[in-house]
Length: 215
Image (cartoon, rainbow, N blue to C red):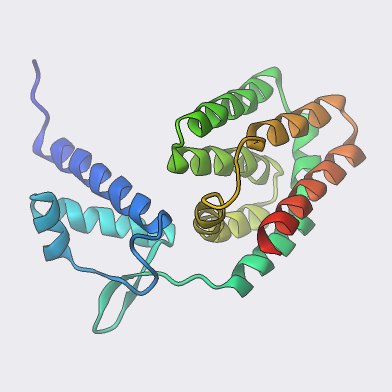
């Protein structure tokens, strides 16, 4: 059996630390403002400091943590106002993004979206919060990527971490039984080829989610 190279081993360990810390942030176990010290994390996982630094850099790039002078890395903050603003913005632009993406969609694209939804349902059955969130982000992110507007994609990349963190909190208090069905209905509307109906369906999807989880 071929042994892993030292770099590959560090990357593998770093990935494990990244996922573990990400889960703790999403679960609220690491609250906003919590300091993340390299030495403490390395000691906790009984590993060297190099993979910890790499994991923290990935978390910083993803927006889960931020660097503060004299404090180092801390869990980034998120406010109720930010979340409300994000969902208002999504109501405005996501319908447009789906409308623009629809004409170029292929059978392979629909298969990809339906596979995400199937895995979303399986994650719900397993109560795998992180998987549910990442699959939900992948579904909606598809349209931001495929609408052929780099500014809209940039907006999505800026806000998706905060969306995940909010949903991680709200999904603990709301049943996710119908989450897969909600997304299947969106795919059905996309398959209809009716651009107006697609835009309205995505706007309604965002509006319904906002009304349920933000009021």
